[in-house]
Image 1 (tube, one colour):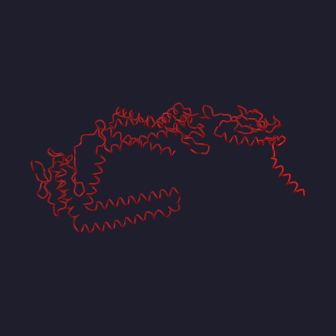
Image 2 (cartoon, rainbow, N blue to C red):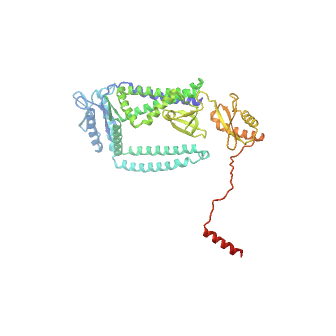
Image 3 (cartoon, rainbow, N blue to C red):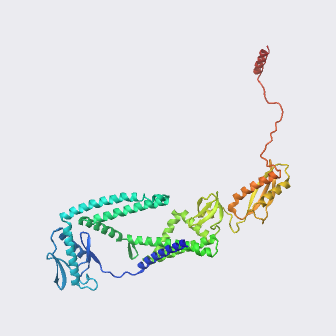
Length: 513
């Protein structure tokens, strides 16, 4: 029950993620005023809007140049707000810095109030900039940097030592070791990231470099790179689209798992029907969800259809095997000549079908080895499906006995061995056939029926053990192959030359003396 609730919770999280992103994408963007940031030493003070004469980036660039010059010049703190042309104007050491308009003001504030707030922020930022450029602050920063690096090094070393103490050591199994290593690595990475972030933020120069680097990365990610129809998309947009599609696939997978494990099992359907319904529902959700996401994203389905048509041509030439296996998978799902749980024989492989995928089928052999078989092979070659329609199948066991054996005793022994085995079906009953007179034996064949074809090898072995025992009890001999060799008498075709005969005769005379 807990596992089911966990799966259902994960599915709800995936659905909420996809729905939230889709709603966010579907909501029309409101017209927003372009703004730009005023910055001193990498710290953002406020944002300015466009005016009647200048755009927001132009205003921000001028303000940032003046503020950065004042930051490196010690003693600049004179920041005042005056009225010019009925608008509040901020002066820096009596020099014009900016004019605050109604567009710059936040809701509920006047331009004058907004100018006073910004002037106070500028004074504080310039005081801080002057203080951070003093000799005392630099010496203090160097000491702080050394102390922080030493402390981080000690903590880095301590992370590994702490995880080797009890109770970690008392639970030294592979899972605990894996989590311990992951914890050590995560802790060290977070430690040094926090240290680097603090050190970079310590000095104004490094802080400014850090801000410029972050801004460059942000601009690169948000810059439009892919124009489609009337819209342009950035790298962030593409990453969000990919995340939506991945979340959709995960949500569809979780839903089908819950459907298969909870709903379909209650319906008392067989494994093949459950797998077919779950697979069709899964890919239907993915296809429909993908179309919906593309519509929300603003992509024209007709352009996608044209692209898919062009892609199909490429698939037809370059990815023929993949397309063939995908098509074969669809045929297997709907025609169902092979279902999950069937005991099949494909070529030299024999086993149970565990899963029928879109491209391949997993067959678990009798040795508990998973064989990945392409779907097209089930439609192009002969496949033996022992479980198709009716799993009851007949087994043939050839048996040979010696010539001169009592054939009635042999038949009775074979039938007795079959009837004693519980896996042999009573109906249809076992039968014994006299096949032929063999070279060295009388050949019989025992025919039995079984309901579980995956156990046929075990059943044959048990029957052969029982047959040998019954034949031995009946005094019936099991022969081994024999061959008779007949030699015919006669004169060998052997003749000697006259010279050799004379030499042999002289040799015999010498031996006789």
